[in-house]
Image 1 (cartoon, each protein chain N blue to C red):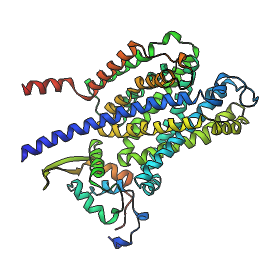
Image 2 (tube, each protein chain N blue to C red; image 1 turned 45 degrees about the horizontal axis):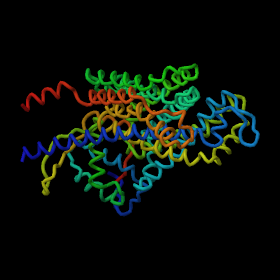
Image 3 (cartoon, helix red, strand yellow; image 1 turned 60 degrees about the vertical axis):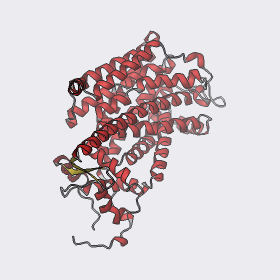
Amino acid sequence: MDQQVAILREQRRKSYLVRGIAFAIASGMCYGLYTGTLTLAETQGVWGEWFAGTEWGNGNPALSAFVITFVLAALAAGINDVFSGIWSVIVCAKNRQLGDLWKTIKTRPGLIMMVCAIVGGPLATIAYIVGLNSATSAGNPGVIVPIAALNCAIGAILGRVFFKQELNGHKIVGIIICLIAGAIIGGTSFAALGPEALLGCLFAFIAAFGWGFEGCVAGFGTILIDYRIGIAIRQITAGVLELFVMFPLLAILAGEAQVVPQLAAAAFTSPALPIFMLSGFFAMPAFSFWYKGNSMCGAALGMACNGMYAFWGPFFIWVIMGLLNIGGMAADYPPLSAIQWIGALIMVAGIFCIAINPADLFKTSKGGA
Amino acid sequence: MTHTVATNMVSTEDLMPLYYAILKHFVDGQQYCTQDVIDALKPLYGSYKLLNPKDVEEALATAKENGLLDEVAYDLNDAGALRVYFQMNDFGQDMVDRYIGKYSNLV
């Protein structure tokens, strides 16, 4: 019987690791889909006119550079996150968790979750969209994604500092390999690098830091909260703050408070709205699978698998905008180059390094021989 | 316990979230498997959709992966399936005490 127990234990351990990795990878893919659909949404209807810096709607004056860069980023982030919050609450309702959701909000772990959402939402998500938009206008939306993927490394390092999470040699090597792969994927089109792309990279780095912090603190906070409830708290907090605080606040900072109702009305009646609903739909599993993957296979491995969106981001931007030509601008979104595919393979190798100590693998195979 | 309430009188309104109840079931330091936890919580949380073997197992395995619980024993149930017993460690006791220690169901 002991032998049977040992066999079943080993099967169970493997399936848990595999499921954790599967969730974390699925999270990265959803992240790519979220980035791709959000990029698409921001080219549609009135959004296209806003970013083009022309008159919009029925002869409204062109928006100022500050409004285009920051106020629209907050608006886009807010619409996206509010929709993903709504999707998350629907998932909770399906599991009949709405009572627990409300009760959890009023407890201490719920509060920690909301604080994390403040760092990860209004700060990091808006920074990410500022980065994405700057890079898009520089003709290269894919470039900032791998920089934002640095949050994998930042999260693992913060996890080591704050929570004494394990970070031994092979994990560090794996993280470095992932970073190099991210740089290869993003760096292929650095030829087009202009000041706007540089600004994009800077904001992508801010996003990376915010998400890295959130990943290790919220991943830790969800220990005490069901992850489905955690994500609903996170997305609603972030969306509400972005839409109802950051969006008007940034417009006031720009000295253009009058654009708030105009932009909001135009955005919510725009034909782009269903695309935001779709990007919000993908953002929901992007975050909840990330939390789940982290808690199933540890923050370093979870975040590295999630960090494959360094590849999935540019990939789905190309599929949606280029291959499927949904935005009607296929020429601006060429297919991924061979070197980007190679970068993706290197990243898989890096993730493998974080997951499994190569020394253990060697030991096992020797023992089995 | 000074508050003794017949279980059928407790509305789910008064209960702490299920996930807290699952973790707090372990604060007595004893070993429990998934089915033990379900049986213990059934009187109060019987109406909860997520109080089922698959989701409770996932909750326990997640708590273990996060360092709150340890896997301490294994055996086979009558059907020949693996049964894992969990026990809360010092870190888990500390986390529960610090963050959700004050919540209870008063029963």
